[in-house]
Length: 259
Image (cartoon, rainbow, N blue to C red; front, side):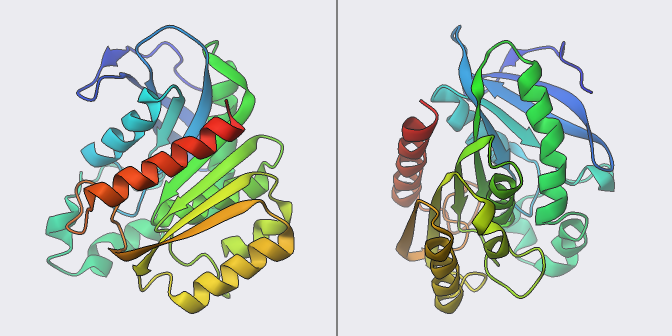
């Protein structure tokens, strides 16, 4: 299933880091494993990347979660593409974003990522430093819908799911996350930007109505004056105070649900 004896080192963000490979739906998937430096047993968290893929900013963000006392898995969901990047969002956004990132995004979707999550859960189950069998999920941009879909596919495993500036959460596509909400048992956090073309007000209303109709315990927050991607430190729209607010909300959610 995976290389559980991968070399562990302390990364630039002050947490233990190793890299493993798991057998995902369509082949070998590289996974970064981030854990606290101190000894202990920690709840598991699955971190779903954005459309720009694995790069230092994603590892930094996943490390920040790990530093709070979690075993965090950051999977390269573009594993079917072979080598790429790392991409610099600021440079990509100067050109044709869709031409660069569109083919990469087309290699996965919410359901495929949820299918790949089975291998990540199995890996967490194999570790002796993981506390309990309940996990949290979190996703950013493209990863937001994946984190929510995983909560629906594995309702007895995922007790908390968070989406930050997740786009296309309530569309007419069969992979739309709002269609999966009746299966969700997790507590859900939705953090949205009020200037986000991928999650306009009418979509937010549709998604919030679906949450309520499904009886999902949730908190939906609108970050006024913020743009899609404000949580990510390598984005031109990064907003440090708003990001701190987002992290505090995420860690409060995990404290309530994961311990």
